[in-house]
Image (cartoon, rainbow over all chains, first blue to last red; front, side, top):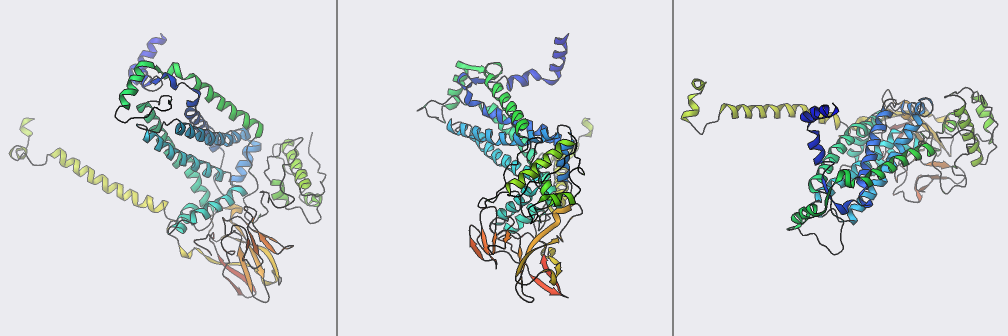
Length: 372
Length: 177
């Protein structure tokens, strides 16, 4: 019965033919090596990024006014919002790293040579696009890092000869960083660059299938343009195996390890920030000034987790000149007033304030915490 | 159907058929439509590429009494090029140094190296940038580090004992204030 359904579907969708030419295509037997797994690993990261990105886009608001608030909501109020944010952040780290390893492996194995030059070139464009995703993505966090990072990006672009100032205006959507800038970067990050990425990845994969996976390189064996095609065909006939099920095992293992790695890092390290409200007048930014004695240290968070969001610093203001935060906190009604998802965040805030006070060499304020 | 065949295609074999004529007309119409679509789309996307010099405007920074002589203080203004949904991102800081009388130097917050916010240190009379270690003297000239030029300065004026600056643009090396 199931077999009849399968035949019905296959008659209309031609899935088995599609399968044979893609997953089932022939590869040289010696291409089933651990060195070849990084391409599929990168693709795994990309698919994970799309899925987590869509989930985040359900809640994130790409407005200069609301972005920070929506990220705080994701961190503290949305169920598992912090985990989705962490997955997306660590997924991007893994993607750039594994893509770099993939590029190195392809280069060292000489897989860019005839007839696979276009695969390599499309891969180079994919590299630039992925780095573009990383840059536009970090702007989405729209905290102090992102705001000043935008200024840095604009300053770099401004150095282009002749069209520098015009490119700056194009990048910022105007003469200065304003609401349009974030919307512009959001569109680039969610629509334009992913569209280009999907198109180019399709081309990249199509070329891989059309030209075949390169055989494991042998020292001293040169690639001769005139005879390579026949040599490769002969090799496939002699020792070619279908990718599925004979050569896919290592790719499967590595991709799963990549996913598990991202899941673990996300669970252990958590998301990044947002660190500091993007108010440009808060110029005592979070970044430690390396040549100052009291740089920013990681605040100890025994009871809660300090995400480094800097709400304590931004809302409550700088540590006042007396070195005592107590009066400042008390003037703001203490921590009970702010009940983001209950006790956990209040403890995190208390831990963050304590850590910052200690790091700055000031008295640690006693702050009453709600509940627990 | 044979009776409908036009005689012209039989008598002149080199003439264009109706099918190919329609093809050419269809292509031409599509080119026209695509052009009419592309013009507004490209103008929309690249609308900010052509710089509008009039984007700068005079902004009030505060009363002269807010800026004591021989002191450098942080002042903030609301970005004139703002959108309704900007929130706190539209608050722009700047360093106001009053020399004596009505002589001022108003520095942009952006370091001339790559744009990070410089901080004024009263203890050492230096502006220092936290990103890559650039330092400037109290008059804005370079002291040390990677910045290639002195701090960007706003054009200013005093009107009715109020300090005004001309701003609304992110200063970069190729387009200082």
